[in-house]
Length: 159
Image (cartoon, rainbow, N blue to C red; front, side, top):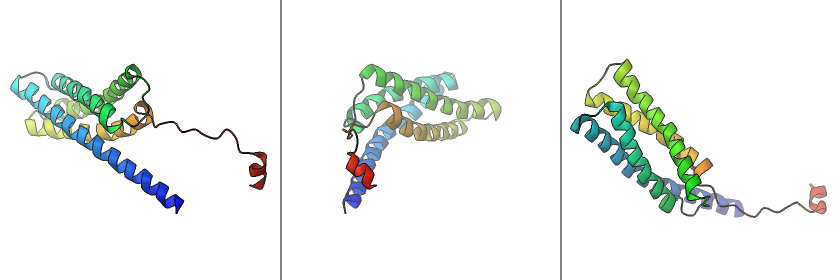
């Protein structure tokens, strides 16, 4: 029974985290896609420049949303450390997106808004998978639990 209760608590905690992460991600997604389209097609900036700026704004929003809502229950290892790692990992995710867009625009030579936006969506999807995994692993750490130092000799011998 204890095992089932523990499994349920872990699963429900993960579902809550995923829901919050998804909400922040959805808003950041609108900022990213809207910013890319506004900068590229509204202001006529370059495709990759537009992507970098839109993602930078979306990433800043996502950091604060995730730090103070999604992962607020997790250990805080210092704002400077978290912020640096968050942006470093988002840089990797941005690179994934830039590769998708750059391949579409410069290799396939598809420059229409639909092609660029499909490439952007693929890049965002792949980047999101990377970010969810990496944030939990390196940025927003699980709260440390006190671990027993060693098992008594009697317990060790009984095994």
